[in-house]
Figure 1: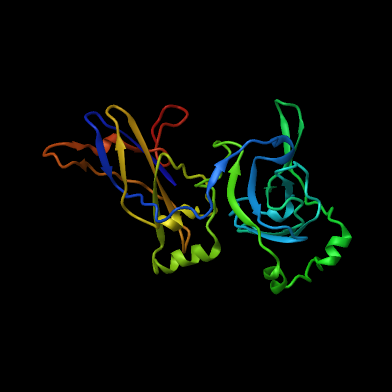
Figure 2: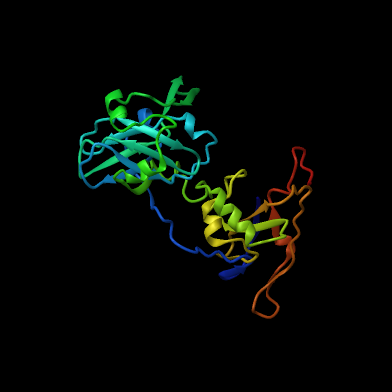
Length: 294
């Protein structure tokens, strides 16, 4: 990922380097909510159950960047009563999605699934945070009634259960939100992207400053939707330093010793241009600790 900056002196400028286009809206909306983060963590999924049943299946396409979500607890809470759901069975937990079966207490009703609850210890100035380990607190009679045991649940059984609907993915605030740059693309989506660009050694994904590139091990789902591109558009106000980024995805082989070169940016007005010296790359050049350029 490269971050660039330039200073523009003059009237409003539209910069054309890479065009950003959102191909489609996110399937599940992302928002914020309010709850006790100390016991429930910073992230949850809102789920709707339409009718009373003893066991309901929910498929959560959470697209997580943490490497081992199977080692983290999931807490389900009845939104109407605030009561924790104890009869909960984890069918499949991975980075792309989670399949869970639970016993709803209120129907129709709303349920919150907190999927990254943590435990904080130590002092306020130097806290230690660890994610809660998975719990196994479901009643054996309920598990036996639905034959919910690891390795014994068939796909047909899962599909025959009544389904709950995921309505929104929530974070405690915008600062902690994963959307959109920390919502990962699935393996199938990444493979599909590569098939659309056969033979390319790398792909470029330019981004406006509104969407800081944060992940280096996964592609954001946003990049799958808008696709790779070599064009960008952005607007800079008079006298400001305008920052933008280009993510370089080494999709088929490692790439080393990357350098960035700028050329003069010409406008539609004769004689009006930004010199190459007005641009700089934060990731590949700068001033070192003793004041020397590198």
